[in-house]
Length: 382
Ligand code: HEM
Image (cartoon, rainbow, N blue to C red):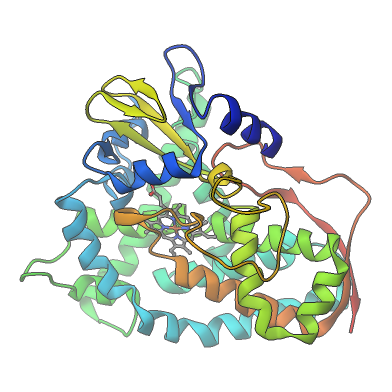
């Protein structure tokens, strides 16, 4: 997509995708302007796209992602208390043990699809552990997050697709409700218990807000991290000198992760709705225009990022937008960075090199996510 984004930034930085359709915003400055002005560019206005006429119940439609102030501030304050550093500290040993196990199996097999070998199961363990779900359910997360992510793109005529989504939502609710009930009876030191106990000005999360947040974690927190790990592996395979450098200087791992987040942003875009007529990048947008903010393009905008089309391990990271900005800034940014660091710290000492199989990279056709559908690799153990 990147050469196309570069052309759009140069020629038509704010442009309508189809006549009467949504508007694509590709320059860093314009994307930033929108994210900084939520009173004009609304998130709540997008709730409708999560509740098409054929779906009368979708917990994600009541989540933080599609709330505006003041409801957003209140709900976000409640969940961020439960989602702080102590939650991550409890998770870290679980992640390290999981990563060590997965890497041992991967190295023993030599030739593997990197996604099911490491990129999928590590984030699944992270989310599964956070939500308090049984490990036997982890293999279902991909299907769950695919189904929730497909809501707005499912055609009115696709009755089978709709049935699958409704069924998946019911299935997820069944398991999540069980955990919530258990923690209500017997609180533990975990996220769900902390969410049940959280209070701001004496107020707790409503039942619907709690369920919405648990659902949101599966939508926002799973596949994004899978793709970050997969995209990192592609770069390590394609640039052996990068892999060698990280092996000899593990302190550079966090800079590597930041640059992967910029260069192959796992979340390529997000949406906003204009609440009034407004000008953006010299273009008049009518009230109720839907905007797609292409962060994947903004993060490669030469006007803001020098030599943006190249990967620089030690690039000073200033203000890139892999996690958005402002009121809705990703709540899971620290968790994802931790997962990527843990994965790389387990993998790098164990491998001499990583090479890709002969087939060309298969990117998932999506305007929202940047990730692979498979990644065949051969590892040479250290
Ligand atoms: C919001 C990206 C991982 C939870 C966001 C947003 C972006 C983003 C761009 C802002 C959306 C907007 O402004 O409309 C990413 C990327 C990730 C990642 C690239 C990994 C590479 C995670 C993880 C979790 C998480 C692991 C939690 C387990 C959330 C939540 C929000 C959010 C709850 C909504 C915050 C709000 O609306 O106030 N994420 N995310 N994310 N993310 Fe992430």
